[in-house]
Length: 268
Image (cartoon, rainbow, N blue to C red):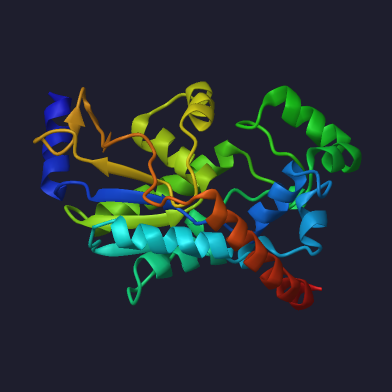
């Protein structure tokens, strides 16, 4: 009858909140990686022409467009909005939910890449050959690319405690969490109980775009109690609400180059 006691305890605490996880919109670090893809630079750092600290990377013009289009279509009024400490996440939250209080929580920060920040794989193989060898051998879930970096196990531990915060403070409410793609994949592991290999498969097959959304709801009238464990249900695969045509993308790219010059002067 132990399950009955656990069930009654959960019921006494009230239903879990409905939770919407939203990835931050397009940031300037992604412009650096896009330059690498176009053959314009060997690394994102070289493409940007400056080392912007990870927590100060702002949204690009395209990112601001994505967040604004998401604001127009999201159609929810959350009781609480959380965001990571990183500037691009806070800016995304402020655009989608203007005038609302944003609760900034460091547990939502992006996976720390350490010395790999804005570096290419080729650079890392040259600078940290032993670390990269372990990364290639062990896989991205269990290893980091460079000294000072986190793996997904670190991120799982980092995220676990904030789940209790959602449950304790917002029972039966609707909350929005604006964060980062690796963190959102870890959220999937926490809520959907995926083993690490399945999680890495989902990261490829159901990748989360900028301003991509993961919506979780109660799976049944018993407030989520299933097979002896409390669970939330993913409403649908990751989705986005913004659309853009190729002409818009090129226009945003030109604007981004103008803003990039200012960032180079600021962080030189």
